[in-house]
Amino acid sequence: MSVSDGPRGDYQRANSREDRRRGVAATPLSVVSLLVALIALILVFVLRGCSAFTVTTACPTPTITVVEVAKEVDVPTAYELWQIAGNDGTIKDYLASLVGEVVVNTFVGSNGFTGPTGPAGDAGAAGADGQPGATGTAGTTGATGATGKSAYQLWLDAGNTGTPDDFLASLQGLGGADGAAGVSAY
Image 1 (cartoon, one colour):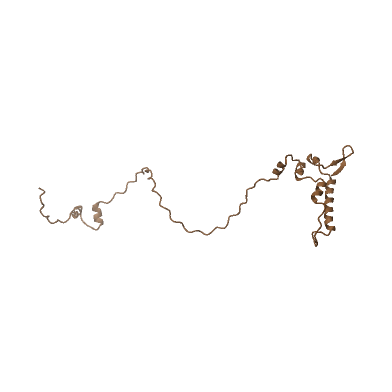
Image 2: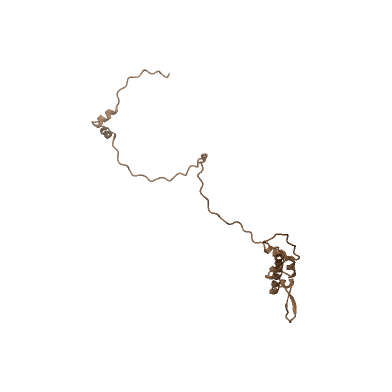
């Protein structure tokens, strides 16, 4: 606890828990008091031969702890510091303010190396036949072709000679043998 001049010139208690709740800042005197208490506790250990570097015998138990020193100089709690910082609410509100937002792992790594090609798979079954397509539109009439050669001319081109009558005579085959007498159907 520390004291300071009040508004009327008298001494008043400063740094009480009530003052901290209202946002009154800690005075330098209370901070100095806490530092002096901590230094005194460290000196007790060092002067009794219990430094952290040379422990040869069992260290005596100190008669006062850091927690007790903190209570004596009225050190604010984390909740009280949260309120001094301008926040308002219950301890539950304070604890909820300590929880950060949930972040989904958003790291996307680079693509790895391409692996070897695997073996070919089995052939799949044949698919069903599709439906017949629609009838197409009629095409345009083609151009008239060139006049072809007559059968007589083709006969001549094949190496034959003669008149058209000779050509017609060449179409008649040799006479065949007479056939046997037929049986009556009656």
